[in-house]
Amino acid sequence: MTGSKFVDTNILLYANDQTAGEKQRKSAELLRALWETRDGVLSTQVLQEFFYNATRKLSLPLNVPVARNIVQAYSVWLKWPITDTTLVGAVIYTPA
Image 1: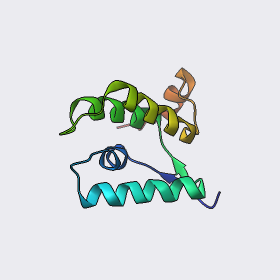
Image 2: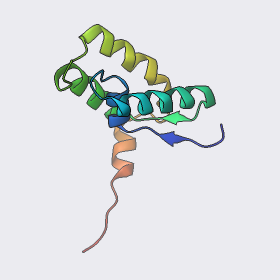
Image 3: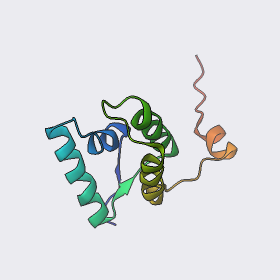
Image 4: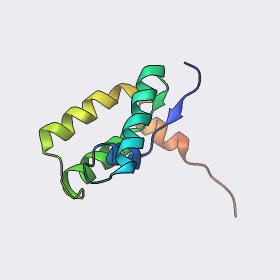
């Protein structure tokens, strides 16, 4: 792996939004490139946001089985399990 690239929810949404025009094309192209280089990384939050918005907010919403399959496919890009320890460890205390 040459360097991980974190993928934002909007990239997944645009890539699957048939009404997004040039944004759809560019996002889909970016995702294909990241598959080829194996550099794509995302979080469980991104997948959750994608599923919710793809099935409810797109102009042409995806049906649940299609969105679920996309989430399952991209779940291989999850690098860090989110546990209670991960969550608590991510909280940074900054004294006032």
